[in-house]
Length: 107
Image (cartoon, rainbow, N blue to C red):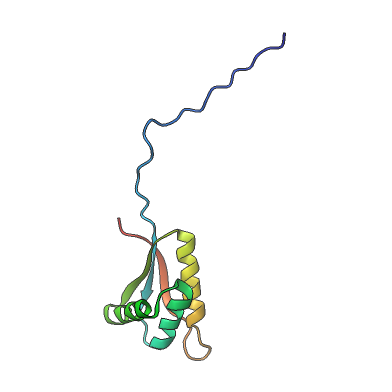
């Protein structure tokens, strides 16, 4: 009779991983050369914001120096939105595109 091989089961942790995932956010920074209308349009296209929310984010970034565009994202999604914001706000000869960053969200 052939030899029998016993395979042990992998050990499972008795406690589920409950470490909170902070997620990622996109932060828009104010600049002095990108027109408001261009920033609002870019926020609508790249981040899927409504006109009203895009206007509020643009005004907050202008007044405070920065504003959170979206929260609760994966790092990849935050980077994609930043890339889209730069693309949709770039106008050759006028402005190079907005400055934004993907950042880990606050705890």
